Image 1: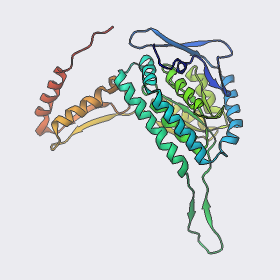
Image 2 (image 1 turned 90 degrees about the vertical axis):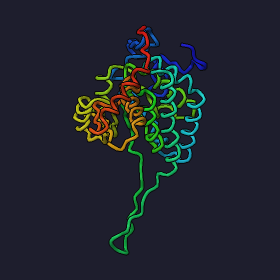
Image 3 (image 1 turned 180 degrees about the vertical axis):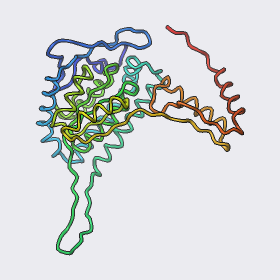
Image 4 (image 1 turned 90 degrees about the horizontal axis):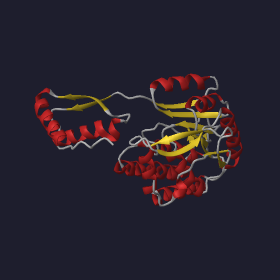
Length: 322
């Protein structure tokens, strides 16, 4: 894979404030799903290394959470600028490891960077509240504080946007983030971490932990210093993470499996409906959480919609399988 900035393609994990291999020396292959060719190798971290990353994040957090909101915003803004500068390389990495068409990968990089832009601004607006008191001799003030060390487990289908969506708000609020990317697509996460480091993010505030999902995820769930867990993935795994995180009473955010209907009403613009249906069903080869699972069409326009949908299919030329 040819990159304008080859340093984005890393074969080490980022934890304890530096890039390093696993202590065991074990690695996991990252392959191109279209060709089966090797794209890269990443370390296979063990629970002991995850614990070390958590402990280091706790130390780094002490200064980061005391940094002014404006300073954190500036670092996020610099990260945004670097993502924009290297957007094409990020898209190439994403396509190589995940498999979506390059045009869709470019769209995801832009989509992912929008989260960084939003929270770079929101970092400056984490204001508290003054609440009307029940009597004149007291005053009620709400002060917002970082929750602490956060952990994120992200899916393979959007290996850039689902990461920025979780990292950016945590950093804006003054939290540390431990990221476990999908084992199939860790290279996009590592590339983003390279740019975050260059933007001035202090060591230990962002860790990218590659390795077996069960071992890494288990340690993130059970460690008492991790105060917030966010996960995007299947309902089955989400239930497991909820159970494991309950013993330490973690705050959790779960985005789990979807079951999306596509509904076409009687007064719909049929051309727009057909176009929307194709996008909903076949974007990212149908591997999205909002992919249309079933299509409901009003009986009065069923035949017309079906005819237009079939006509749209005939315009699609199938590509040969490599």
